[in-house]
View 1 (cartoon, rainbow, N blue to C red):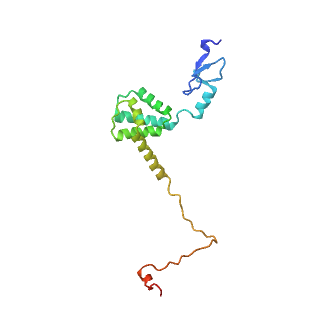
View 2 (tube, helix red, strand yellow):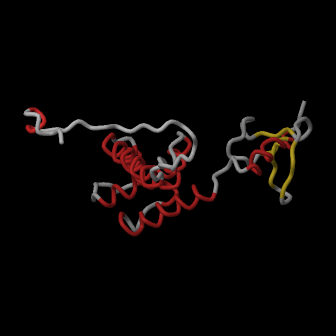
View 3 (cartoon, helix red, strand yellow):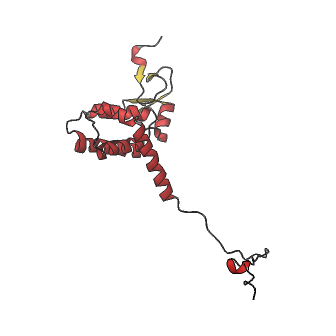
Length: 175
């Protein structure tokens, strides 16, 4: 039976083992003397499965914008918790930034961080985001169709057009 002191906490945010490391049984790694990780959790962390730099930058953008446009007395822990919950639901950080900008631009009634998730689920904002993404893709993809001169020996056709108009009916088109 293991002692209580043989249990450590895995610091990986998405630990599949309930964040418990039994140091007498489990494979683990120690970083900075007090940070324990399951070996595979540390590999996942180092691969970059944690938030990448873009997600962190997007979260910081929303935090800064919140102070500037919505409330200077925001409780950052609530805002951060709300944003992390939305990200854990699989919502992209790009979409969260779009929703925030949409709320600010349209002066929608948003006073507290937990209200932000209701705007994320609004159908009109989702449709506006889809339209924006479509517009961006259209701008980024220039017309890929190009006409090139063919110098091969393929057969060439020529079309002789018949005279058109009233004179062709009366026979005046022949010379």
